[in-house]
Length: 71
Image 1: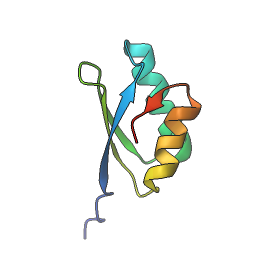
Image 2 (image 1 turned 180 degrees about the horizontal axis):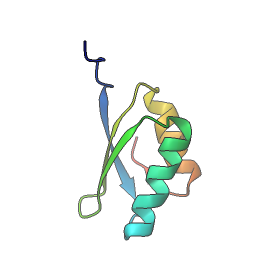
Image 3 (image 1 turned 60 degrees about the vertical axis):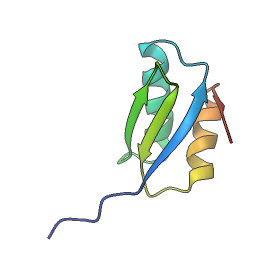
């Protein structure tokens, strides 16, 4: 039996411009939820996160890393 996939949430993140930014956002989210799946699209500034953690906690992890998250 397969486990239920974590719900996916999208965020608009400002200030990301390079692969370092992608790595920083990914690390911040995975520090909160090591099992989270993080997909970043630099060109659109979108971050899609598959995690069971609350939306506000995920957004705060990104903000704490120094990026602005549109609410």
